[in-house]
Image 1 (cartoon, rainbow, N blue to C red):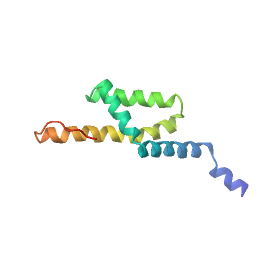
Image 2: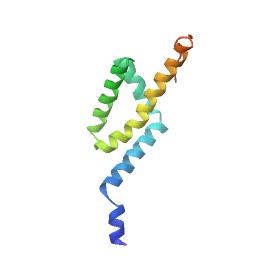
Image 3: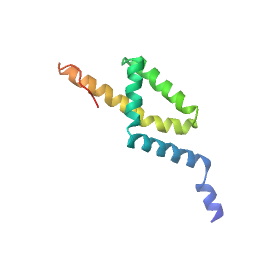
Image 4: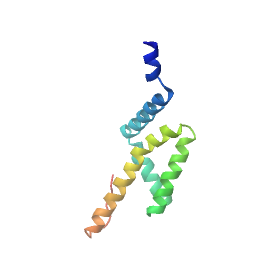
Length: 102
């Protein structure tokens, strides 16, 4: 049992589980939407500015987390960015102008 449990209680596995739990907590409290909106508000909505915002948010998170956990945490934030940009692009393509995505 001790030999088997050593394989499952690996440090990398706990880092991955921790990153998933932080990502789930961010989605539960809509922190990913707030981070995405604050970044777009601060840096702009052009693709290079959005990429810079994602990079800055990842850099900021990786100061306190491992790189693996910060990457896993950025999945909900990047998804919120994509939904935000998709919600802005759809009405513009239909000629209706912008609408509030949240």
